[in-house]
Image 1 (cartoon, rainbow, N blue to C red):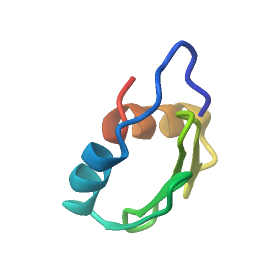
Image 2 (cartoon, rainbow, N blue to C red):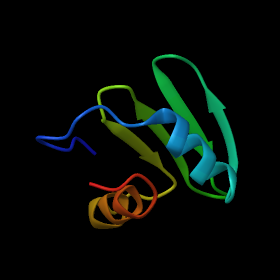
Image 3 (cartoon, rainbow, N blue to C red):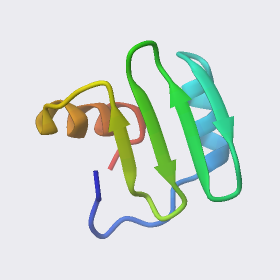
Length: 69
């Protein structure tokens, strides 16, 4: 997912929110969240790789749900 016109994500807030629903690993450039069958890799520029679905619509919906636009 490559959102347009979005600033850099707040990794502190994302880490806290995602840690409530899954396992989170973080580095300065990215945040990985394993949400039980779905995996999100969120980059510092806001892009996100969603694993666990091949449906682009579901990937965008998961991004919206967990990261927000």
